[in-house]
View 1: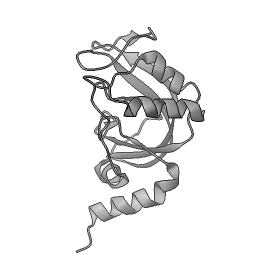
View 2: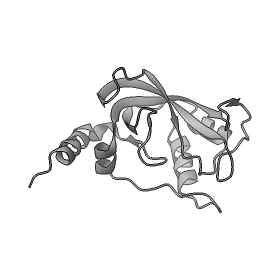
View 3: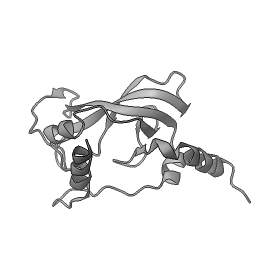
View 4: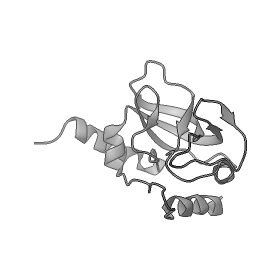
Length: 156
């Protein structure tokens, strides 16, 4: 499991010509920008093309100029906060479509369900607040909620 996560981290951090680089985000950025905060885990991966049709070719890629989007299947374990009247129990969260990934790479990285983690999303479409940045360690839950409270009610 550690090797898979290390591999995905290295892929995310390696510069690829024409690809976007993952944007940095602090826990405060995520906590303050979220419309939805869940405890969740990744249970699978899929890809859709520009028309929303499923793509099954493991060599199919994402990146600038391509219309494919890889989505992480996220099981919502607990709703911490949400602006949705009825938050879903499962989400399809898109990865940054400007990053160069293949469906096979991401499926391999998430071959097993992940441990539970904090999930920060925005809008009614449940999208990442910052492209490619929406997970955080569950152990930082209390800190995230303190930061969220501070951004809602700043101390003067």
